[in-house]
Image (cartoon, rainbow, N blue to C red):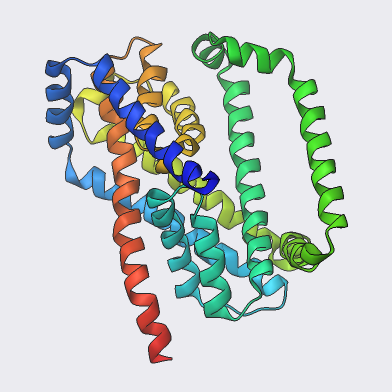
Length: 316
């Protein structure tokens, strides 16, 4: 039952946010949004899709630094394909992508699955750290923008006022989890493999700079893909460039609420821009175009990967 709920809840949230989008827009506004989307200049849409695809390709290549650090060779094609398969799986079944990716990397590269889980966890920690750094950067550079738009929410005020309490609770929960894992003998070996994969970050040595460079390139591509969309529709010119960076951050942190951000991503960006006087139809146009570009390349390359990888394995 719990597994079904984990799958069903994000799907229902996505549907709910799409329903909310219909509720906050009139029929005329929805027609206008669709008109704007259809008028999008294909060259900018393709540029955004190419940048998004490049980020995922670089992510696949970056993982190879970690596999080499723990003494395992890996195929570039398999590493890249596993990323697209991960995101495609997440679109169908929330939170399933990491399992699919770890399994693919393990089976095709002959690496213990516990270690592939560990390396993916290490990657996730790095990416979360980068996203938090971006959030802090936005906060420092555009303090008034963030304060004016986000901290009208009582929940965020509560988090801001109780941040240390929340941190202490998280540390306590983490400590409890570590103690429980340590005492359960049957899964200690598995978690040791995860720990070894996670600690692959500390074994990068000479590859640390390339790993950091690749990480920076991934996020640069994502940000540029988001920015390029602004030029695809002439009506989006009214969005000030100073709002693009914080809008990107809002989008990043909204993705995990539903399947690949379905429904919530465009609505979150629209609500953020609405705070600064940007019409709902303009904000939703921007959000849906940005989300669709990433979703399309994920489905195309993910679908190809699911089809091609088994054939490559058979031919080997």
